[in-house]
Length: 65
Figure (cartoon, rainbow, N blue to C red):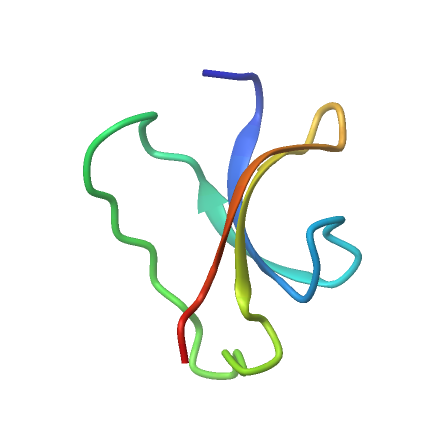
């Protein structure tokens, strides 16, 4: 749980370059987020749970190729 949490695809864990997929829908269970067609998943190879209000990483995962 946390305030103002969003799901990002990012090039690194500091969210210096990212695509915002939207607000985190829940803190447990399966969730689906639409990835825009223009997103290069080779470049944006990390998924971040990011707190926009405080600029803090809550969790991350690497996308498998």
